[in-house]
Length: 406
Image (tube, rainbow, N blue to C red):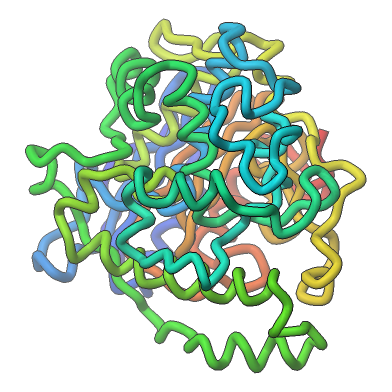
């Protein structure tokens, strides 16, 4: 029988059992931590770290991929809460150089809602995978860039640029990089083991991520898009494919180069554990956790309200969508059929390979799930967390069929 470490409160055993059933067939390891009304009710782990031939334990840390975007969203919403940032203000109020390419009227909300039209980089810009870890290299490109669609007219997931764009807003307003701001304003008061820019003294705890299935070659992506009737020669598709390729290479670089783990790629190179991810979300809802409540109720409600209502993907990318597009709040993913979280009212962020963090205020639940394995994300509920999500929903008495966000 697969061995699961940690503890669960009485009544949450089905969550542990579902976690164990999946992990028994996973070549890597994972952690799952759940808070309810500020109390830790599930704190479990299991599996292994192949490159160290060691067990995956409670203190293991791993790359969070796009769960990092949720941490960046927390920072931006804290600045909104403090009145230091105005959601309807032009970005140029804080970042004057952003006006290049006709972006002088772009609003802060466009950056937070993936609707600014800077989803990727034109191939001619020459942005290399390692450049993504250096804001001084990519910011000038973004400052000059003409948006790929009129800002606010459509939205599409800014998979690698979101953290750079919102992170620069945080830096301009606070005077600190988003990693520094997070460390001082979120991680420190909550005592989190979560960093955007990993300190060298924490390296010994890190589990490298690895692929469990071969990565889909770029040529296959091109064939797939072409089969859907997408114009591969359009500026939008050329930027999407070029950025997708450089992002895949950047994910490999996180493993390969210590200095890039120390740098900030705030769309995806946060490193931490499930306890910290869960505790971060627990601090945003209800009465908070351990005496720390980061979000006022008004801030939380604004953050999880649908900010992309009435919008869809840019015309050329509508052909690639199956079903309704995933909605966004102010930097947070909201529930959708492939990512139900705990249904209506949930907000959080997933990460490539099945990483996940979110809160559901109505049930008082906040959770984090972190692992070291990677695989191509299916267009369905991720198998890594599908079954324990169902078990948790039953315990919390919420209906996963009601995924429409608030």
